[in-house]
Length: 196
Image (tube, rainbow, N blue to C red; front, side, top):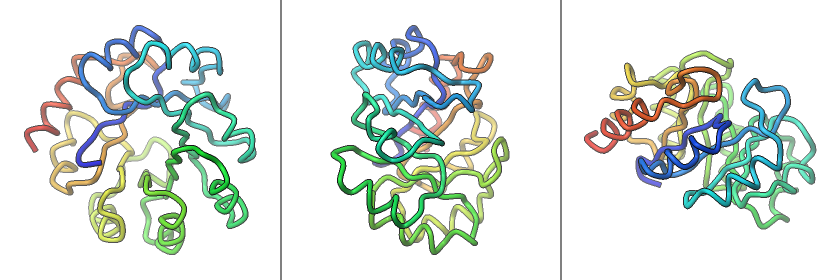
């Protein structure tokens, strides 16, 4: 994907329009009630109409069948999957982003996950914590085009750009408040990525 940007946890249609205009590559919307950034399926269907960029439905819970019933071509499953679930995703015509915790103890899971999708997200193993740059650097050796997320913001994006991942996944790092994105911050982050 080459240094692309996914803005995640988007709740509002006006942000969808603005994010399209500033040139992000993917927009993530969380359809899981465990999240304070939750949006319902109708909002996601509406967002698809307003977006030229792919909308990614992000799920944590639910079974694979329900997840794959999402109204978008792209789905992100933000939990570890069993071997059975990994095999299940093969039978659906969806682009799947699989979450892999950015921790050395998950190297074997990473090696397995790459057989089921070409879109891996290396993210913090603990929600809200910043990812460890050194760990991510080594894990990118296994899958150089992986995305990275977890505590990335304007203050630290430059050090992660140096790792040259396939893409960046940013949510709270570009927020005015939960779910409301700061488009000026997004523009600045795009500038840093492009000048990386």
